Length: 124
Image (cartoon, rainbow, N blue to C red; front, side):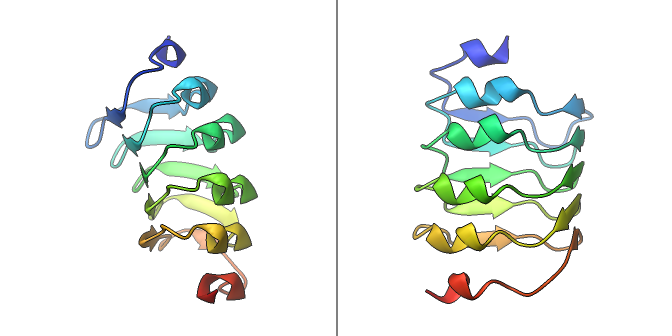
């Protein structure tokens, strides 16, 4: 079970043909700083448990079929510097809590179904 890999720092499975959903057990991987699942066939949502990984610095889910909303809990990841989730099916608004992330350097959300305004919290 992937959740038993509590000391894993990087989870890199980009450019494969991995199918299915993101396991909730990713939330158990407390040492995880970098996850890259770009260019796969991942569906469903980002599980809420995922946002309990407070050491996450790079999150790359680009070019999958992830859907639903991006949780406000993304703002609880104090070390997050990169969040790439382009070319998916995310909907709703951009979480204002991205504005809480002082270390955020790269945010890619193009080619989704997001709507509304860019949050003013981004400029604070």
